[in-house]
Figure (cartoon, rainbow, N blue to C red):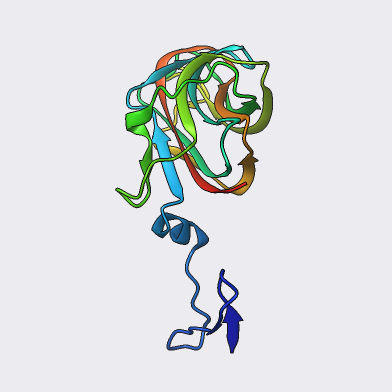
Length: 193
């Protein structure tokens, strides 16, 4: 059995001892090739309510001058302390208005030392009107009857279902404003646009 690699070179397929086709994860390939990156808040952050343009949380932005597409593989959050309000966590998108590269030291290549991303990351900005694109989970306070305070990090595999072309951003979203309690993260891959 033969197949072609990403350079269109014909190669024999590799199988394990049971004859099952062996395949590497595309995300592992991206990491090994220095195209996979992540960013996380380094301390708990407050969030703004809903689609506010005075946004805080965590966001990634593919600059309009970029020659890359940012393929988003993962988003997650944890509550360092209970939130002071209940609501929904999600993702919203906008253009690049207001974004600065405020978290330079927090952005990392999945293969350490493999380089720096073109995508920038920020934890607060005055942004253009955003659009909600995913509602992912709920959160609450310790004293709510429904006990919505999560005990473990919440991680959402987006599997490339959101792609940021140059000039777009993706940000954390909470339906209610909270005091500093959330820590968010993103994992994305950069490929030529």
